[in-house]
Length: 74
Image (cartoon, rainbow, N blue to C red):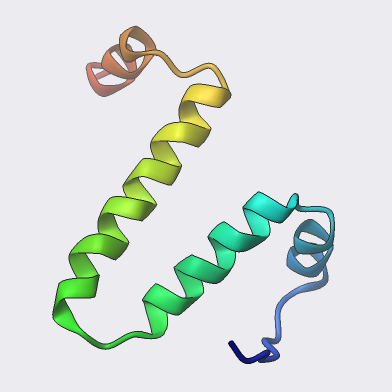
């Protein structure tokens, strides 16, 4: 592995500094997948992003019922 430097806003830098080791590893994996050009990785990347979004939504209290009511709002 090699270390790289990315320019981000101060808010993003602070959030990364306070992130857990697991969260940092997930971010590193997402960046790695993003920078790979292979088509087969696109599907893996999308699945991982969707899983992460689902996990975070569930952790924040989103239930299938709440999601359904949001989707059905006029």
